[in-house]
Image (cartoon, rainbow, N blue to C red):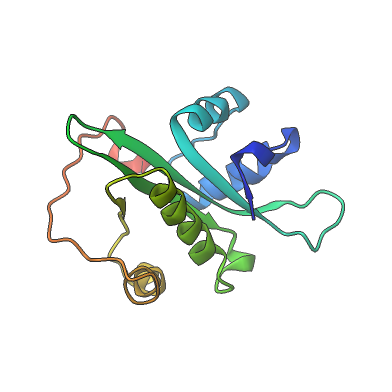
Length: 151
């Protein structure tokens, strides 16, 4: 598992493949956007090191750093693992690393929002039971700037 400082020029197609798995919207990232993300957030990637030539990215996760007048915290988002590598602990390790980074940065807490659908049952089990995340009783509100069929 490698961090943001290890992103390489050829990583963009791998990251865009993971983005496609995260959203139904037809969005892609660019080199410039990744540079912006690296200045504003913690972006980590997992690589398949069994492939000696290029070590393609097989997973990624981002932790946005939020600062308010009274505390700073991390918000984990965009946890994605290629389907061919799901169920092998890649996503769990990515989230564990970001939680540890949050602790090391002195954040008040780290949170993660996950969907409730049947396709998220395994991930929610890991977040709650393995990683000991506390399920919050909260309402999440969103103001969206795209059409319903784009997301």
